Image (cartoon, rainbow over all chains, first blue to last red):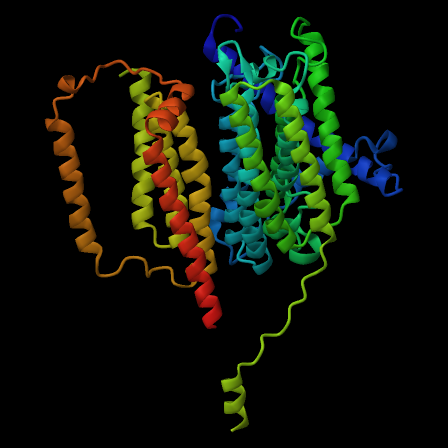
Length: 378
Length: 168
């Protein structure tokens, strides 16, 4: 609390977040282009500034000064409001995200659930953008994003719920408070006991971010950018900002819930000077993992995408929840949890492998009914 | 007027205006978007009543998932091409029925002796853990019945959709 004034305190904390978001987006944009460039044996941006470090800044200035174009037939209100509907929920979610045990704007008792629920609202923005643009590629992209994001929201929430069920707290087990979840991890992070939940969470997060291999809603070669096809300048930049903020949000969330947040491996005794770098390292590793996945994996087909969510991720998430419930009821040691979850992870990886290797379904023409054929011949 | 009352009036105004938008908007897609506003307003009312868990569920299920599915259907049925076909001749009947329901609810609220039912000015926060315990321990059968109904509805929808597909 700063100066014993809750309003001033809240305002300052929100100000920090409001400044950190655009900065991190600029940095991440540069890092992403560099990482993907390196993976693909290119240099990435090199011209503006030393090693191209000012490229993202130059791009930002370009985007800010670019003309804001609205198609003549676009629906005015939905088209212009859509970027805000995408960005605002992610920022609201970020406000309740703890970075260390006392560095947050507002920690909620139901923090984990709140963050997952509020960030879902950005799907509405994508659908609004697609419909408002009055463009067939945009509406196709909006349909795809609505279907994909809702489908993967369920395994994402279920994986988080599984961890929340077994989280150690001072009074028994089970909490949705992110600070308590992190503090409960003590010496061993939950990724050891809940590896299946971590697997599901990361895959579902990858799909929620609609990045490769899950970039079906915005695929350049299929729907030319999906819902964003008609946007330019500042509004397009807001969509990109929403995407990167979501990337940061989900990475921080995964490192808090599964990787021990600011606790593991240094413990709770160290101060913020060590806690902040620790969580930044974990988050950066996850972000780099997401960028790496983007660089090396091809896009899934739409049938693979839906089947994977409903036939593989969701049943496995339920398996994890049932296992956790049994462990809670019968008070088994955590080792059982770790072994059963590990077995689930191996199954998940095998199913993923089999799913990817499955041959392309051949669509045969519908057989002509006997009666119809006779009619034609007559 | 206290701060809480001020917040309540803002939230209530958002809810009512969103509801009016649903009814009065000429485009059905606008109506669905106003529905999101109204449902988020209801989440705000839940928050003011210290029902945090309910508010978050409201945002997750109604604010996003359900309304997006509604939007999905509306967009697939080319709702935009027929912008004014939402209110037909049933408008006056709907108005009468709606006002009658409103009147009934208001009289019920005004005439009920709340103090006799144990209501106080204080709002007590029910922790999510307590809520879960009573939902899954004391009321688990109604909960299971409700989920069974939802499953039946889902399977029925799939079967109906598939039957139409086969007929084509």
